[in-house]
Length: 313
Image (cartoon, rainbow, N blue to C red; front, side, top):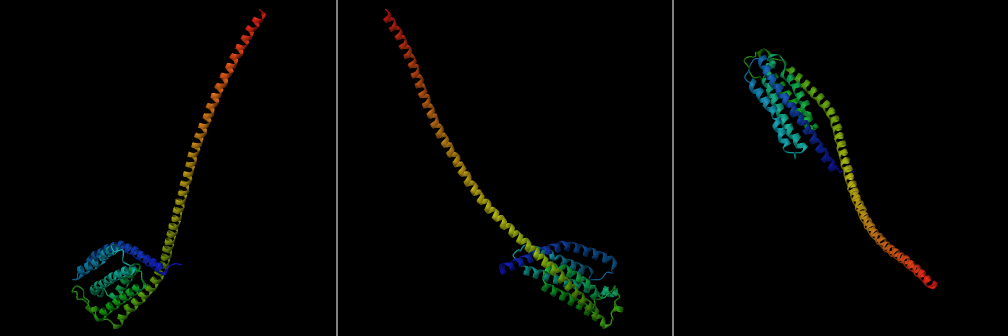
């Protein structure tokens, strides 16, 4: 049975790993986003009429887009941070970025009014795009819901500012003729924004919920596979160690047996050599006796012949 604390720790580590992977991808993507914003600012410079806050708002926005890089470095330098703490840090970073974007949009409200485009409606797709980008980084339904609410409140704020006519005055843009609008129009961006954010929220929750489940299952399967591989490797290491011990013991036995056989062979060779020597000695003695017997027989025959000669005389 899996220990609940161990399982929670594993899921916490998986969440942290997924957030860090998504953060790494976002840092790479952010480079292209900043490059695109710079290109857009330069192009807008040639299209739009100049106004006082053009460069300051653009630079301020780009600086806040750059904020993610030192934050990502800071998080990487503190591997002890939990997933919840990383999520909280990223939440505040993105919340500040959204507020800054809202402020930049407010500076551009007179331009939107000049072109008869309500800024609250323009802000909705920008916030939706931002929500789609930061959702995998927060990796939390609670934080994402708070972020949806923040974006919705900012849309309401922009709609109210437009309805009350709290615009910055730019001399290059004749906005006075568009200042008076029906009060009912304030609800249009609010309703559209609320509906859009609700649809995006439900869609993202379903998509990322399924993605998260599959991701967790895949990572757990990988971890289980790694654990099984480690266990199997450990078993094989133990089996190899036991086999090495047995082979070493058997090798030692065979070596001792070979040494004993060599000793036995040497002893038997020595014994056989002694017997051969003894047989050679006996053979020499036997041959010597036979030779003496032959000599004695010849001597006897000679004596017999001499005796016969004496008898004849």
